[in-house]
Image 1: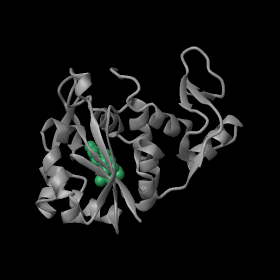
Image 2: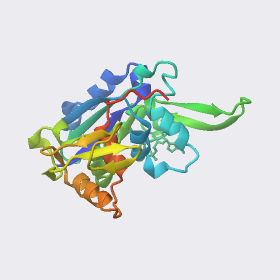
Image 3: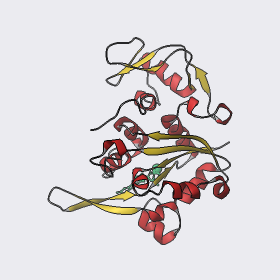
Amino acid sequence: MEQTLVLIKPDALKNSLTGYVLSLLSEFHTGLRFAGAKIVHVSRMLAEEHYAEHRGKIFYPSLIEYIMGRLHYPDEPRKRRVIAFVYQGPGATGRMREICGPTNPHVARETRPGCVRSLGTIVPIKDGQGKVIGDRMDNLIHASAANEDAEREIKLWFRPVDIPPSMRTYPTEINEKHYYFKDRTLSLTHEPGSVCLLAPGDIVWKTDLDALGKLHRGEASAVTLEAVAAKYLINVHQENN
Ligand code: GTP
Ligand code: MG
């Protein structure tokens, strides 16, 4: 059964479009079902992992600020949220991308009136002197582009226990060690200031457990430590900067 990740971005929350967007994504309209849902205060680490493919691009810094909610709530950190969903059903990824529409809201309005992103906007980015140096696409929603992206993204935003057991589609395992995280390093023992990511008995994505094992042995891993840690740190701390 196919699954896909959907994010209701901070501009949708700010403009009170959440209910409208979700009604477009209803099972009646899409044939897809919720498998997971959560309100997330997006940390810089989570934002950077989510948009890792865009690292180095000219719009990357503003994209990170955007998904963290810093652009739409510059003075109200507690309002900075994204709503994350896993949707499940036949052709979930393609179906969701279709309803979202083109990335650029102007193109969306011209070519796919009525799609979610046709309600978005483009905002000029100015330098200190007020000169326009680029633009920002506030397009209200994210949906995974392909099934491989969906798997990576669902595992980045959701723990297995966030999804009902009968709806989990990726392999899980029972963890047998304590894993702690501090200053972007991993350890098996607690030290002052470290956060416990996993304890014995926790159900984890198999790929996360494989990654932690490799990283602890100093081997290369396709799943980064940050990608595993960012998920377990969701809503643990308020990040203000
Ligand atoms: P997401 O669902 O958010 O991943 O959008 P997408 O898959 O339709 O587009 P893509 O992954 O290529 O880009 C991610 C986000 O970066 C987009 O949603 C836009 O907000 C932003 N973006 C992409 N391309 C551009 C661009 O050329 N200029 C600007 N300013 N922003 C862009
Ligand atoms: Mg994308």
